[in-house]
Image (cartoon, rainbow, N blue to C red; front, side, top):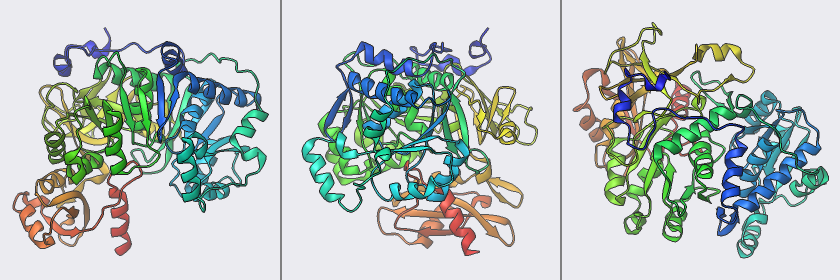
Length: 557
């Protein structure tokens, strides 16, 4: 009997009616997901980029051209090809083309420093790099590729995929940033044509590697999770089954999250492609642009991070934007404060289905049902075919009981193969098919998962554990608070104490807000300090960055 059908898993009794207890992973490789949708809907719009539409058939031809060009280089199978691109048609075509050629995608964040990009190019052993023609990314990559295995760099011109008038404006506005003079071998179209041969389909097995996705993981040290074709196919299938049957007339999704991040890769590109959706690509986030897209294109699905929904709930223009076209929104990447969920749903009339996952799980492990009320404070139920257990961090094979906090362990077909060339780090997080997430949480009586915090973010006060997220939830309830992050700082008497960083919607003093919060917190969680800031640091995905604040505090000391 499959693990997901065991009667002791309480979450199965609370699944939405359309969701299966387990899933069957499609045969073959990940490209089959794209090719099936392209065959069924060749003329349907696949991508919309700054007002220009691209059909499924058009993207298939572009992907086959890239695949053929890579095959013409006669690289060994499973060679790594790095993509350092924003949300644009070139990224989507390259992603599918690399996989169709039998190679492995390495996703690079364009905002990384040259040293960080150099590390990931060297560590992955990438032989080909595909990027775009804008500074400062291009300049950093010129430096980063030195003394790496990279043999060729292909540079795409973003303006080539824009509508004519938009392209003219782009070239004028980005005159100083555009890189216009490139060696021939660095020009995407020229390089691809030079190596072009006829494309030959490559047989792919599910356990072959598809993606190297760099992550801080559970230790904070950048390393690449090896995600197989089966891992990514499984997670796309799980999420698709969980959300229910798509609209037969087609869905429209907004790709506001960067596709090089694994949350967007699965919840936007893979999910959207599997249901033959139209993807509205945003190369960079601007709230006014998003609101205009909602008004113009009437999207039906919007995956985002909590800060996005917080911004929509509080922006003046959002109050006059009709968002009822959205069937539901998907929140992930960071904890969703209850106050943000309530404010957005009240203003928009659209439900948010919050989920939970991490890179090592392709990334989704659990999600609230999109069409029924969420369990308050939870990230939902384990996805079909996924098993979650709560175990003691100090005695990892000792399971916790219902409502007891411990480390979240997970098992399922979406769990990574391991870390690239890092067996020590792999052994630290994988045990007998189980993934140690490094997150603390509990399962309630219905089987809904509640995430409390990351183990490494815990604040130890007089030997007792204080969870930053619980303090953040209290502060988020104050009507003046817009965003909040809490971390531990050294304390002479207690070892550590909590310090809060907030942005506010209306004037209030730090002292007044601290007194208000401490009146609602237990003695151990009392705020030692509170700092009001104009902005809080965020990652490119839009998540609040506790890491940057912690680095600032260490530098002060």
